[in-house]
Image (cartoon, rainbow, N blue to C red; front, side, top):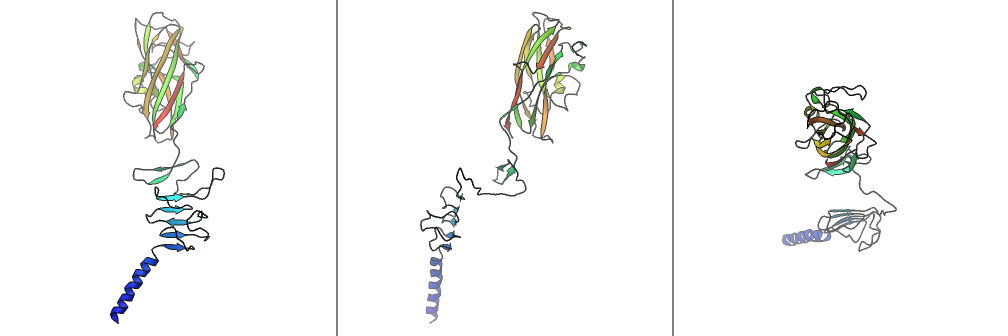
Length: 288
């Protein structure tokens, strides 16, 4: 009698396992090991009225509003179309906001972050400036003052950049205005300065922004001291990701000039005009 009871108990246990291998709620034909059909209207193969269902298959893959797929763990759908879009996912972790992107760290932890534009950022030029290769020259007609320690001067070219690693390109047209000297040349250098670095004395090497990466700090060329002296082309790399502010303005500075073929104390040059077609300053974000 005891053996019969044990046999019946074991039979009941095994039967329970077989019966409940699949669980269906509101459905007599579950399409996975667990299937919830709130409206109880899905057909036996899942081709009709599955949009309200939640299904987990034998591999543990989940389908919400769709059948589970073999290539993804979670398949979501709310029956939306291109013309009738319906959101199927919402994450409220305190960082959500208009225009934000869902970004993952190396471990796969995701949160909302502001969109980072990796496209083109364009700077601008203004009325331009007059300057001389001789840092001691003073000329009230052209508003030229002495440049202590051969410091550079702002060209009126500037660009405002957000946080990131940036590749900055520039071209700067330079022309001779007064007391030009045919056949003589100078080596002129440009760099980027910011509000904290520009006021530092000691030469342009001290004025350049500390955000500039080593060996990517100068754009230079040889200029003639007559007529259209030439155009300075070059590029810079800067990394401002550690700054406290959300953006910073950088100024294109010219100076650190070496004269050739004798002194040029009276030569006056002009550069930085917004109307000069050669002048440009723009940047691409390389890394966030």
